[in-house]
Length: 364
Image (cartoon, rainbow, N blue to C red; front, top):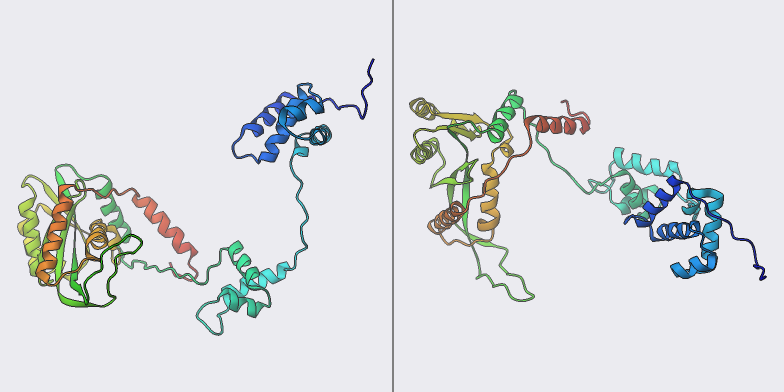
């Protein structure tokens, strides 16, 4: 009879819960590979395998199997997780961290409008990287500035609910049109010819330009279909707006009511426009709140026009510019893409309330 040498092997007995946990950790994609290997070692030992057999099966050293077998028997599942290592001692105290945070929030930089990591490091007597880590930990970004504008319209809530209701639940037998004007569109030409795109070289153009006049664009965006009705005018007055209303009236079938989402420009409220509306009772104007043009979906269409057509375009006359805008509008209407509004009025108002709650001394 051959006697076994060395220390006796400790038997591993698993409960049903421990087996299920080990199997889950071993196959979970997000588990650390070291932890998954330890789980597989324990599972194999629980099947009755010796240290040598398990080591050969999993391709590890026999001492590794012995270590995690013993660790599991002594501490069960907790024994498989790495203990936190002490690391180097802290060189920045909690008081130092508090001092940097308070100085960032409550004091101004003596040589600039805002703190930088270098100026704060010099003022606080610590390294730039330490200041950077503290700012990241507390979400402080002195170099960034956000902008906001709160509407003072006393009917803000009612108008938001009215317009968002039109977007989410358009009325039957009616057309919802978002109407606005993009005024003073400039016909710009570069002072030198544009250099074409080449492999490895972007398109190049001079930074300066020549102006060749301006034009004004009126647009009405159909919320459902995404099609637009456009008109270009040399001037921007109530007379031009009334002419555009007549154009809308001719393009919308007579049996449909017309709901127009529009801003508070003075040209939209003149006596002549009011008289026109009285003669055309199927038109219903829905005014956006003051300083809230973001509620008008046609602004999104103007952004598409600017980004895809006007910003990099060159035009040597207003006639050429107007022809380019008409061509782009026709291309859009050949394959219109409606802009889908998702947020409800309650979600918008809740988001605004949360934003106001984060502004110190906002008065709201």
